[in-house]
Length: 322
Ligand SMILES: [Zn+2]
Ligand SMILES: [Zn+2]
Image (cartoon, rainbow, N blue to C red; front, side, top):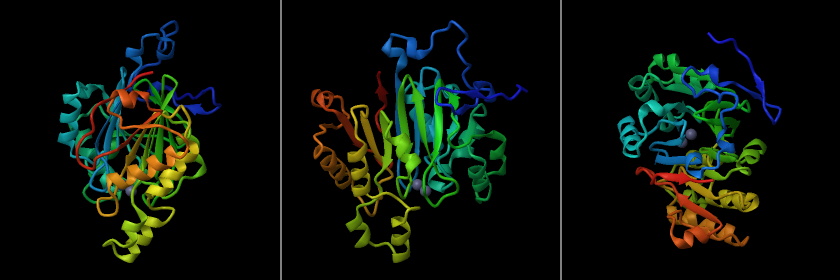
């Protein structure tokens, strides 16, 4: 086994080197050009696809030319693998699954995916793993695939550098991820009741941001949920509502932010129209022009693209160019 060593990166934080993960992409040899030094934009793309978002199942794929990984595994494993293949991703290129927390809409299919793709690893904190092991219906053998990660300690995977950061929610040890590649940041924070200081730090540096817009307050208040559940959703360890997300985005917006994907929209307490309108109005009041992410001429002229992730269907295959 490789001797454990740590690397101090530019930010003064510890980095777990590639060798820690047997199947991860190796560090480029001296003299080999890093992606950032590569002038060819085609080799520096970041790919993204969401296979589902919301309480019925969450899963997305993020990839580079070095391979990629899934974030969460709450969508039927067959749909995910078919969706990857349909977009030309070979399963051998998928290094593993990162988990944001242990709620079943994020972990249900993790073991099925790992068992059928034995090269994949499960990247989560020890506390998230323990949360998983306490769940009925998830094989204890899932721990054989586990690679422990630690919040705020970057690790490298598929040519990217990933940092997990704490978010407040009522699962076990909840987190978002910031994925750095080619000086751009793909950041995801799904299932969070409030934007805390660390979450704000990472999200305000995003080039591509997936952020929760769970509910419309009026729909929740006058909707069918029992009072205890309404209260749970509204706490700091629950979910973000449209106006919170809109106000936060208005506050942090900068020209660096190119795409915002609203995620985890409630089926009962929200609609894509309401979520999109709230965010669009907030940003437009700052003078930001918004596109629909369809790459039309109008979209290309806009400052930023705004998309609400569908609950069940996969999105299109996004290609983020430098
Ligand atoms: Zn969830
Ligand atoms: Zn959750």
